[in-house]
Image (cartoon, rainbow, N blue to C red; front, side):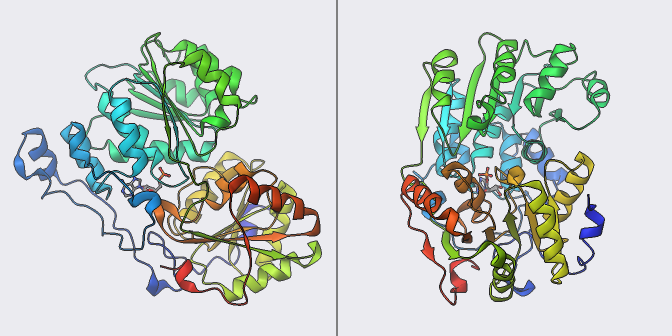
Length: 449
Ligand code: AMP
């Protein structure tokens, strides 16, 4: 198998990250690293009035946003009675106002309700559950109080990093634990007090089974990408984990897609739940979707044309199988473009490295399987290419949602072969969307602002 290093030979041109679209470096705004000021922390703990003025918020993102995130009721984070130290973390992350899913879910979870929430990709679901979790955790109590279940390792690491960021002024102890890493390290870490565990279900269940993680006092259990967690692949382990938590535990299920499988779980474990559905229309308003009808053997040439014509800040290119991921990454590199690849058969160490480097802008293109189709949030990705068209509407929605994060603009290009034509129709019908044929020129204003 070609190694990560061998495929990334042409990665010298780094990509500016942080802001959104725009092909050239000049068009991209860089997100400022946020550091807490001691003055702010001191002001907060003393209950000083000046705490907000002293916070170091990142540079304001001035890109266009769609009503997927702007159509709110007008509430403020301060309306929810959150801990001051948590508000500090929220504002220092650059969140000025709650998004629609945050407006709906945060108060319900704070009230102790079970919640089943459906909202579009990239509209702020993660903070919608992290904020109530952080508010509920009592750091004076030295045991595990909250569990956040995530189906994939990369997403678990991303989510735990956000828990730490939002909770940086609360002295919260968070452990991220996923398969593919040393179990012993996690056991040792759990010997010190931990308040929140974020991880993949199998590993957390393993730790609980070995008495390394005591979940019996867990009061809130969150499932992100809940439909995936309740699929047959994960369901037995997830049920076991729910049963390990305190009988009074509260459940929060979040996803953009909810097939029928979720219903049975809901009836059994949370019949009284509050349902939030912000998916009246299914696709993201900011993402322009096109298809190019192409023969299989001409796909690489078509991709080459796209690379030369589009203003790609960063792109994610999806293939159907691991071998096609590797092959395509090699072809792209041979064409002279900088490119990494990632898939589930790589070692976790290589996966983490590729992911970290792509996020930091070390390369412009990432070729992948559906491993990064869900949840992954890289604001500088403005183009998603389905080199192989997906088989289901759910996968399609998750994949194209890797661009157009938080109401920003993005482009999705689908390479469609003769065999894909029925699938294209099925997905368009299921999502109530018409995917247009790709025009000769694409207005950069559709995905670069
Ligand atoms: P998510 O849907 O949770 O993956 O979030 C998508 C992106 O929106 C992430 O980059 C978040 O940091 C960002 N985000 C979430 N909530 C807010 C907010 N209230 N204001 C601004 N950005 C946000």
